[in-house]
Amino acid sequence: MAQQLHVELVAVEEKVWSGDAEMVVARTTEGELGVLPGHAPLLGQLAEPGQVRIRLAGGEQVSYEVAGGFLSVSAEGVTILAESATPVSAAQSR
Image (tube, rainbow, N blue to C red; front, side):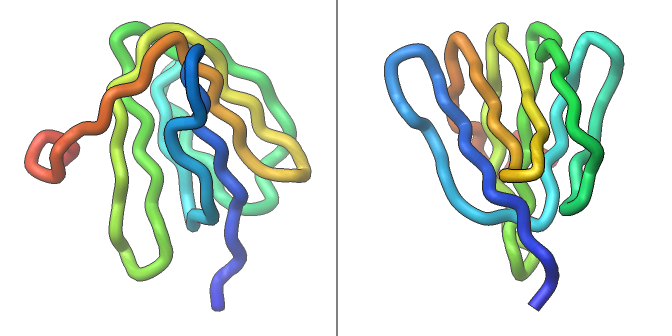
């Protein structure tokens, strides 16, 4: 089994998504960022409008449109703190 990241996507009012993933891609104010297991710790501001894509084991992907917030990468995993997060349909996330 490939190494996994623990991912938490949290909006102001609720935890939106939580689980293990192979990769996270998010657009920050510095550009698009891909995070794989073992990534160096960092803190990035999410770009607006932005999208967070979470690639799960087996190639499945979940995507969310996010507004405002931050992405934090640590030894424990990836935490995305957004003002709002709305699921994107599979057709829109490609």
